Image (tube, rainbow, N blue to C red):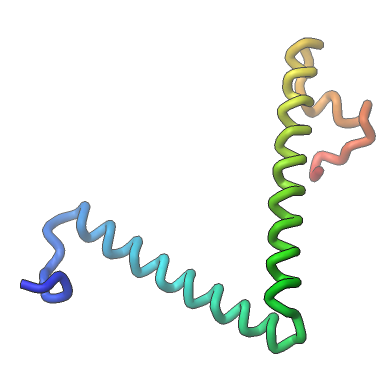
Length: 92
């Protein structure tokens, strides 16, 4: 039988089918969001640049969090206690 005519064989296959459907829906939603941004005048290059900058920002933020965590361990305090010392907001 072809894969499309097979019925799921238990919980694992059902879970996988459900996950596939969720991913298809996310893909469709992202395509729609991209189309919306393009219709608002954004270019693909601009969108790719924003994504690249967000990745860079997240990498730098992760490195900063790691360093802050190591400093907290060395000082025997929580990371949260270091935030005021470095003028950081808890949302940073």
